[in-house]
Length: 102
Image (tube, rainbow, N blue to C red; front, side, top):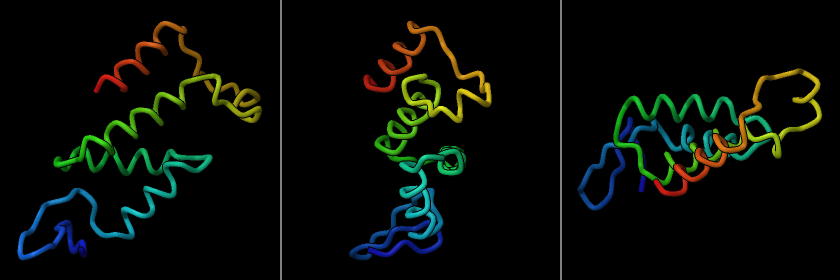
């Protein structure tokens, strides 16, 4: 299947997708699981605004966003910069639960 200008083509049917091209899709896939997923999360946020975002992408982005707030996933560099990511453990637990239940 080929994605052309936001449409996925297959067997004569067209399906509207929020990404522009496979390059856009591959960029997000690679960036989302890198050490700095911020650009991928911004791109997914743009996809959300276009609508038709598959649930699996939404849930994966929510898990990565929650991990960004979890001190367990901090690097020593983040701790030094003093980024205010700390959340109360109960709030963090609820964020994970809401994402998983989605």
